[in-house]
Image (cartoon, rainbow, N blue to C red):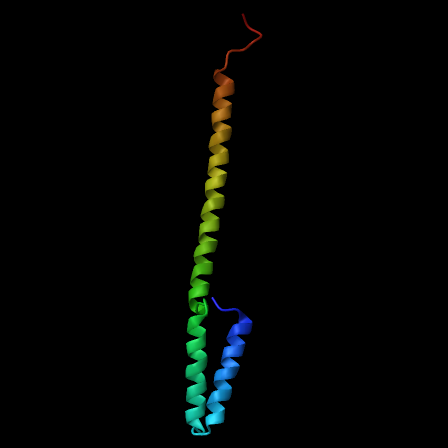
Length: 94
């Protein structure tokens, strides 16, 4: 994965080269710049906002399930401890 500085340096170089050529004007320059930026973004390890939000929602759902399972486990452990204490022989009785 490229560092932000590498990305900016490469982008600046490519934009300068593009503008120095002087062949393209108006919409051509805009289209080329857009394509250049898009190609640089695809080289980065990024996801779309929509995909990020989907993953964020899935993570929150998993956290809720984990909290529920932890609570259930604690309740079961407490119940097991109660059963052990109630079935243990009373040391005060012979």
